Image (cartoon, rainbow, N blue to C red; front, side):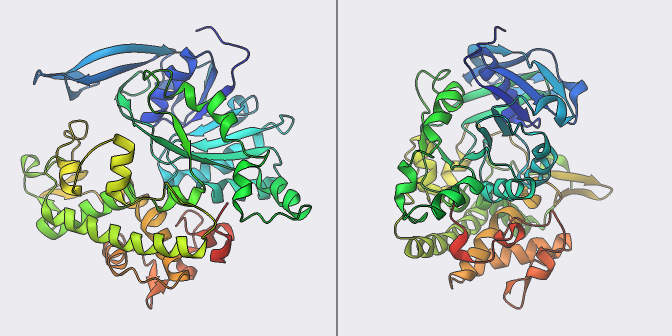
Length: 445
């Protein structure tokens, strides 16, 4: 691939589904792309992404010993990482953009690994993720403070911009199209912005921040966002700016879909199945029990979102949405209920319920990211924000307590978030006090 010297240098960190799409898209757009991964030996010199749409044929195709539904290939995009390494000092210093592609609960550790190698001589380095569920700005600002980084600008996409799947790890991915509307948040460096606000008469909580010369969103579109969406999807999927990272944190997708479905499966089946054939598909077999659990979680989130809007009336929070409105906005759909939006999705149809096999059957896998990401870095954050704003979240509490009883976690005590427990382990949760934010007034970027 020919590198365009006018393009940004991007380091992709992690090997998730999105990494397999970003590398071809960015490399083919002229960017120099490096990859930081724990498994450098598993990656090919050339990574392929096929833009696909579901085929009318019912045939299955095997990739990497896994069967996938056949599809019509619309376009093939290939890209080559310039350097692949597990060592941050080999792939971080020249990066203009660093983007994390991994489970949410791994973000904080990854940021601390790479932070010492961010090039301080660069005017700005954008550090972000393609999935901004859990207060990503809080995490980035923490490493800014700890490492005295004055040129880092955090960003996060609200949802992964496309529906995609890794077909063969380190080699090949399928992309089923971009979302109709993609949303992202960005902000200036926290250390520099504090100095700026201290020397002006403008309060940082006002909307003037969004149009200030320190706003980096337009620059990100130019050097990154447009080359991962509109360039490859006939102008579709353009990114729009959220007024705050909090909009992404309290909009609901995985945070309620995964725990709601898992709790529903537990309530209906006890989380156990005799044979593999008995295991329901995670989405295609979405039932009324799971739909009710998900709706009750969303109702609790809605109360928290309403309280946030009342607390910070100067922000429009246009993109802080409940599940159905987020789904309609992102996919330009007309779904009228949560069950149908998931049950009828062709792209999600073959995703299986995560299980582990034991001698007496198959059990719901309570160590998967549905539990490690979406509860301590999802539901628990909403619980803490609600608590600080005087909002009760009874069903969120119920699901947190249920998951904790299975996993031996005790995030709640005496009707409140147990800060002693939550802050005892470095990677335990993503609530604001983890990052030294103890006042709800300080949760906005």
